[in-house]
Structures are given as structure tokens and as C-alpha cells.
Length: 390
Image (cartoon, rainbow, N blue to C red; front, top):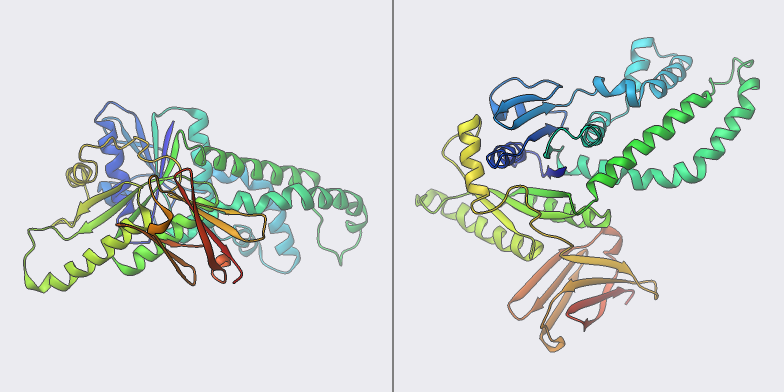
């Protein structure tokens, strides 16, 4: 199943682009499900009709679904929630408050991603288009398997054995909180395995990719650049960037002159930051983009001459690896480049590379901001920039 996950800063139009992708793909005879994992569901607004927690047919070949986390609790969280509620009640919370506290922040989005795994297992559709939460929340969720793996592999087994030993004594002491049964630990293990299964699906670069939706605005572009860096770190492939709401050439009113100049500057930054990843564009329409007709017009604009389900880019525009000296190397694919043409500079977390007319502006992870650019080399068509302590 082809899987495309759309994310971006809130308000950039990612829900409309996700819905438009599904409509365009269905025109070629594909069965496509577009699913929202964002608690602030907007798919119903985009399609201008009510959408529930079960897939609902919107048009020929297109189904839509807005996640309701209650449908996933029984399979993935019920036993853990029951134990956590017992602990909160032991601490003095009333039953209702304890149940609410047992639903940790971000669980709505997480259960949405678990639904991705369920759809892959059921295999009813040719493609799954995911309208994910805004960038920050999505990055936290996508990094969760990596963050949990050390705990599950190293600490979790020790806690499980310790609980088994202490539980008989703790049950007789009212001053101690209730210790989890082994079934709770087993549920935790299953929950982690389900999350890891989602990661396996979304990092499969043969079938899955992330697409960033942006507007040509300073803060939006900055967040998208940061998101791309961290998606690379966690091995999620970005195959396209969609720039939405560009002022069309037909708008000549002087009132918009400064806005057009600003968009032109930000478009340069987008090209420098994401090349050679394809940049898809959509103009600012003179109407609100909801309903099948409007979404179809948006799809025609974004995917003109392009397969909406195609894998538009494979690999990474740049790669960051640790070297043997304790520093790092940032590698760019630059065939035919010569070292004498390279102009290199770094300012904080930003790395600037210029080779002839080719310019790249890379936002590095925060942990590398303190390092300096100590040198560069070209090997087999790749520019390698070394970062280390000055």
C-alpha cells in the first residue's frame, strides 16, 4: 500500500492538499483512503460533509476517515489505562479524573498512527493519505519508537522482574501504590511493538513518504526546514514539498507588491533548502477551498503532469554522519563539482554552501550549532563538509 503523510505548520492548507491528493489519485482507478490523525479534524470541513471514525465514501474511489481514539483504546491501551487509573485513584483522584489522567497528552495523534498499521494489515486500499497533526506534534510521534526502544530493551525487563518479586509484599501494605500485574507489562510490550510497526511502515522508502506543505512565509519555511532535518535523522523520506497559496501573476494591484516580493524571497529559500526534492506549487485561489469541485481544482494545480501517488524523490538531499574524530560530516550529492568552486560558511545551526550557481542553506540539528565548519572535500561526486570544534 502506498502511504503518503502530509504535515506542516498549522493553517498552511495540508488538509486540503491531502484531500486533493486522494481525489486526483482516484481518477486513475485507485482505491484511496484519506485519514486525519489531527485531533482538530478538518477533513469534514474540506469535503463539506460529515465524516466519522469509520471510512466513508466521498466520491468514486475515495474514502475519508477522522480518527476517534476511543475505537483504538480497547486494542492498545485499555489494560494500561485501567492500571494508571487505579494509581491515580490511590493518590486521591476521583474515578472520572483518574480515567482522564490515564489518557496521556498526544494519545489522539498516536492512536491515529496506529490506525495506519491496521489499514496496512487489512489491505483494503491501494493508497493511504494521512493528514497528520502540525509539524511539532508529528515529529514527536514519529520519533517515539526510537525514544522508547532503549527503555523497552534495557529497563523494562528489569522493572517487570522487580514488580513480580515485590507485588506480593506490596499488596499487603496500604502505604504503597498498587504494583502492575504482569498482564500490564505484556500490554506495554504489545503497545511498543505496535508503534514500532508503524515506524517500519513509514520508513519504508519504497512505499511510504512524507510531504511537507508550506506557505511562502518566513516562520512557515523555517519550521519546514527544521522538520526536514529531523525527519532525515529518524529516516523518514521526504519526496516532495508543496508550496501553497502563492500569489498568482494575474494579481497586479500595487497593494500586494510587498507581499509578492516577500514570497519571491521565501521561494528562493525554499529552493535552496530543499533542492533537489521536487517543489510542487499551488496559487492562492479566489475562494475557500472546500467541496469536491474546489479540491479537484487544487489537485489539478498541484499535480499538473505529475502522478500524485508517485515516489517523486528517493534518498536524502543531504546526510549527516558522525566521523571517527568525534565530529560530523554533512554530505551533499554534487556531481561534477570541483573543490575550488566551493564557498562554505556556517552561522549557528545554519550551514551555507555555494558551488557556482548552486546554493544550499541547511538547518542543522540544535546539537551541532556549537560546531564549526572545519573543512570540505569532494569524493566521487559528493561534497563532504566536516564539522568539529574549532
